[in-house]
Amino acid sequence: MSEHNHGCYLSERETNRAQAAEEALRLAHEKNVRFIRLWFTDVLGFLKSFAITVENLEDAIQNGRGFDGSSIQGFARIDESDMIALPDPSTFALLPWRGDETPVARMICDVQYPDGTPYEFDPRFVLKKNLRRAEEQGLIFYVGPELEYFYFRRPAAPLETLDDGGYFDLTPLDVASDLRRDTVLVLQEMGIKVDYSHHEVAPSQHEIDLDYTDALTMADQAMTYRLVVKEVALRYDVYATFMPKPLMGENGSGMHTHQSLFRGDRNIFFDGDDPHGLSIECKRYIAGLLEHGREITMVTNQWVNSYKRLVPGYEAPVYLSWALRNRSDLIRVPGYNPGSEKATRVEYRAPDPACNPYLAFAVMLAAGLEGIEHEYEPRAPVEENCYAMRPEEREAKGIGSLPGSLGEAIAAAEESAVLREALGPELHEKLLENKRIEVDRYRQQVTSWELDEYLAVL
Image (cartoon, rainbow, N blue to C red; front, side, top):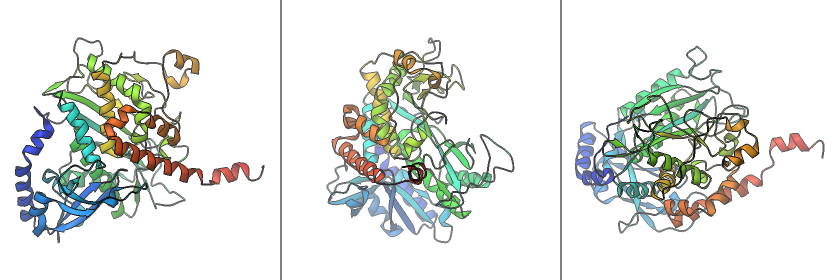
């Protein structure tokens, strides 16, 4: 776990902006950088980018750079005025895959209106807004996502895997070890600390875990991580995908997200007097995630394909339950370091790696804080296998289920005051509109399964 900060992290980061700007300018000169890519993220979590020359770097840090605001809309487009991308100088990093001849760096931007007002559809702004809600209580939100992904020979059907390896395999079958190794090295060159990497359960499925850190830094790192994985794969003439469920009959890719809240150096999720080491705040945070889990699923699992993963039998959660060790539940309390305050955390297992990490972290935090602030009644952990229970048993224990489709997730999100507050009313409606369009487009398709199942008999 990374070193924890005292006081208000966001405020300190903004206070140190001038120092970070000076360091970025120094590094650009020292490394002979010629171009800087300015990155920002649209509402669906896709990276957008444009380049400036190093001669314009200082002015861009001070005043930002204008661009067409319609580029961050997603499918549900409306007219927008010009926008400003204001670089965060603390995110300055070289892009190692661009080579040494003409070094290229990147900075991640906040999106603003020309008058400096934050753009309400900017996912980074939405995360910051929710982090400030925690900071008002003296809290810093830490996360550690586990982003899984697949390698394929090509980005089109028929899909061809690189190996038949399994979980933690160390055999000649795991031919992607070199890809993982090179990916870790590139991440480290960019200043991103890696915990560990390994082969996952499904053929050609892999995972690289990043070191636990504050949520804003982690969201920036997650966006960088997804690009780095793809860039390194291209070097090997293969394709990497974060699609939640590309292979029928195999495990899908998740983004299990470990999370905790610190006040100074104290983890408020820890209580040494509790039999399981969990504080009442931790249990109420869990209760908030369970209470609002259905409502936030449209954000943590935002694609039609996401719901092909959230089905029984493939280690992905389906039911709104929590456990101390059981991996079939939506929320798990990892027990790797029993009694360790810094290691005490909750693991929310629904998200997939194709989400927008800024928005996913924001809505998970919002749901958990609702539980703490409104003192939700903690539920008892479920140690039985929820999948093996009869429906009436789950009903008796108050165990609901996650949405079974994007359409169900939209219906739950539409009525959610918590989600509306976390995202802001404008973005809440924009995402709903966008996702309704996706569902309508999907409903219009006639799939090969339908032809195989019905054509000859109907």
